[in-house]
Amino acid sequence: MEKIHFLIRNLSKPQLKLLRVYLQYFSVRKEPNTQLMKLADILIVNGDEVPGVEECSRLIYGKMNYNGIQKLKSRLQKKVENLLLLDSGTEKREVGQDELDRYGIVIRRKIALFQILLSKTGSSSLLRTEIDEIIRLSKKYENYSTLVELLKFKKWMSGYRVGEKVIWEMNREILFYQQCNDALNKATDCYYLGVIRSDFTSKSDKRSFQNFLRESIAGLNEDCKTTKSPIVAYYTKQLEIMYFESMGKVDSTREVCQELLKIISGNKSVFRKTRVAIVYDYLASCDIRLDDFEEAISHAILAQKNFIKNTVNYYAAIEHEFYARFYQSDMPNSQRLNQILLRSVKKETGDFRFAKYLFYQANVLFVLGKHKEAHRLLNFKLQLSKDKQGWDLNIRILKIQTLIEMNRLDEASSQVASLIKHAERSFVAEELKPREKLIIRTLRMLDHEGFSGSRILSKIVQFSQLLSGNKNYNWEPLSSELIPFEQWLSAHYKTGLKKSSGQNIFSR
Image (tube, rainbow, N blue to C red; front, side):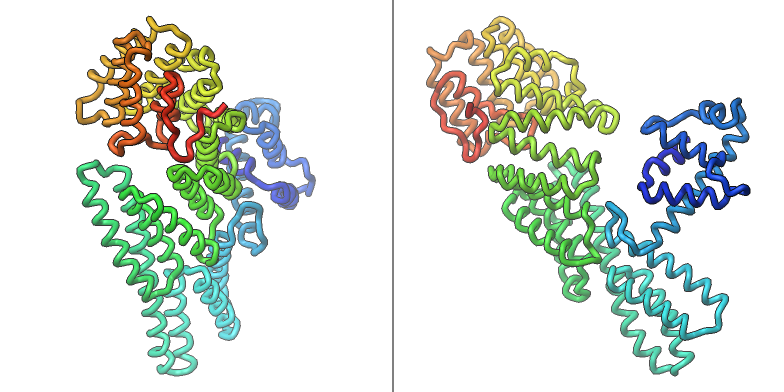
């Protein structure tokens, strides 16, 4: 029942009304309360829960009729699929449907109609009208593969009617759009290869990845000059974003995002709300790394407005807004956003995300001075502990910080010893980041001195300044270290360390 349940649950209200009319039309008695409609109503009433075959059978037949319910389900599924094809083929605007996708369906339906007319009519003027309309739409929405085939067909039709001159003239146009199609195929391949390689490229292969991106961008820029194709330009800019991100050039990434937004917004052949949302989300990420938290919040909210609600991407945009507000010490809004994130899981996004959001909550509570509540959350067996290089390490560090704040120093000492053993056991020396090594050294030093800063204040200041002022030890925003360790160190031991530009997480 899962597929038909999914189809019916995603019908709009007008489509549900149309379904009732459609099913009534196919009823022999033309009555609304058919078995098909009964099954549809059961699926609608059940909400998000998929009803079982036995439950549906007993509600419709009053007994278990396995063969009957399977046939009924199959018939209803075909009717709903036919309805969706008929309804989506119209040129009206459906809620949440982009014009590019809508006209992609329109073009395919018009091609089907043209083929039917071709086999049934002798009216060449009617056929010419139909094929000209499909060609016009294909050019407008850069549907190049369809366009090339239709231009070839029109060339042969026109040549037979007008003469061979038109064939040579149209061949030049066909060649141009073949070049556009080849450029689009190349651009798409380069983009997806870039995505795949960015996920699987090791640090040692980073240079070869960057060379691939640089060469791809150079080639596609030439294609952009030749074709003037917005969709090729779109994929080229996506590769530029990958390239600058791999180089750590946040300003350049942000600049390309602005250029990409203009391409998407200014061209119907590229525009999709999801694409707009992704760029806004990119911008939010760049803003955060540049300490421009107000802009980050603005861009994250715009991303949320353009993403489909309750999707993984939608929650990723909420997460970016959370980070920006957290770094501003806006704890009420940080808590509000994190509650939205917590409500989005486990079913949709899995245990890892749920654990991550619990960790976010522990950080919020810590900044609010609610150390006991934060420590209680950190004692949960979070799925994040499977990630040894990052989340798990920072869970352990934050746990030590909560114990120090609560003056439970014996427990803190025990946790420091456990952290050191964990680091030695879980990492080879090369895998620990310089910042992580320095934080562990700092905690070891504090433990050795009984967590009293009076005798080692100069050393605490030295470590704090290294962590905040040396690029080898820089804190990374959007990482699992939500609270920069040196900021906590300074606040707890009152060293007077100045906050980094834009950071405001300890303002009370």
